[in-house]
Each structure stands twice: as C-alpha cells, then as structure tokens.
Length: 116
Image (cartoon, rainbow, N blue to C red; front, side, top):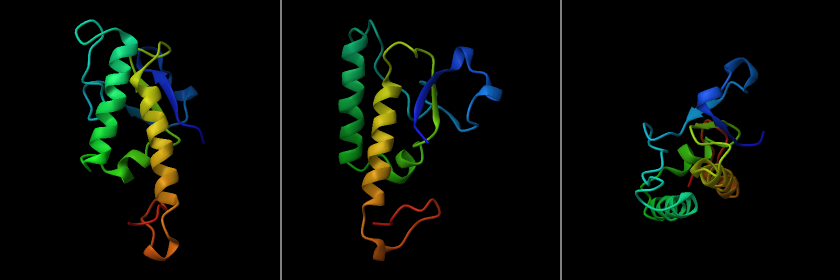
C-alpha cells in the first residue's frame, strides 16, 4: 500500500485506510520549521528534508519506526499544498526498502523487517 499525505482538517476516518498517523508539530514527525519565520514553503520543506536526513544519519531516528510509516496515511494540516509529509512519506518508503534489503540471516522483527 502506498504512503499518502492527508489533511487532518477534513479527514474522514471512514473513508481512510484506518492507518492514520499524525505528523503535525505536536508529534515527533512534525516540521520544526515554520513558513514565514524560517522561509517560504519550499525553503522550510527543504530544511525539513535536510533535518530529517541528518537525524537518520546520526541515528536519532529509529529506522524501524520510520519504516512503519510506510503504507500509512500521514496527517498534516497543510496538505494538499506542498508539505513536509511528502518528504516523510518518501523517507518511510526508503527506510522500508533499506531494511528489507538487509541480509535475511540476521533475522526479522515483528513487522517483517530484517534486523541489523
């Protein structure tokens, strides 16, 4: 199933997949950069992309938790405008593929991802 970004302001649970994950600023997945204060929309999304990648490289974000977002509906307040959720969705799909590509002999976690 594809990872999608939805708008929390008009989300109807009965029409959704049932796998909604909030990614607004009240969560650990929220964008710490604000439109206006930290730049225009494109700039804050790029800042979020760099911030997220730095967190991944420094192992401050658990790749298994990131991969668990794959296939979920990521709920933010700015979609359908360009959104950090689009970056997060791509990162989740990358993490799932990366973990799935780990050698099979290392074992699997409860979600089926290879353990490092």
